[in-house]
Image (cartoon, rainbow, N blue to C red):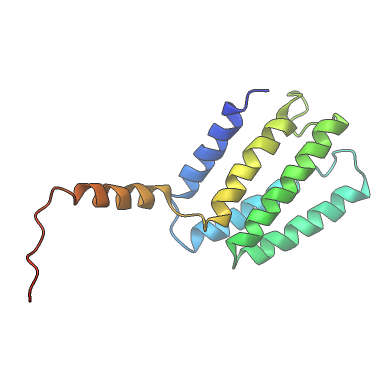
Amino acid sequence: MDVLGPVLVALVYISLSSLFGEPNRRNFNAIFVAGAGAAYLSGGFGAWEFVFLAVVTYCAYRGLRSYGFIGVAWLLHTGWDVLHHLYGNPIVPFVPDSSLGCAICDPVIALWCFAGAPSVYDLFRAKGRRSGDEGAPQPEARA
């Protein structure tokens, strides 16, 4: 399993989500992780699929106000991905390692959520301003 591909998918997701301003970014992420929770509904674990979906949906609902809950939902999905990979019932039926790839991708998104899901574009702008200020003349200190 190639690790780079799933990490790149997570980074693309983070970059595209960064285009949203707040609170739309948080709301979008809460809705998206709720949908991800439903991805395995017919995944082979019977009633446990519905229990998992209920827990992820609760986290997604709480995520409408807190990135921490969105991060928890992504980590729960990571665990579910691992179980489905081991069970042999991947998220994409014709891609055998798709659940494993998802299990690599999801924690990257979770970490971003735990960091408050900052816009990557704002981070680059702030870094550019800091590094661009080094050569700028400094105002004189007044006594």
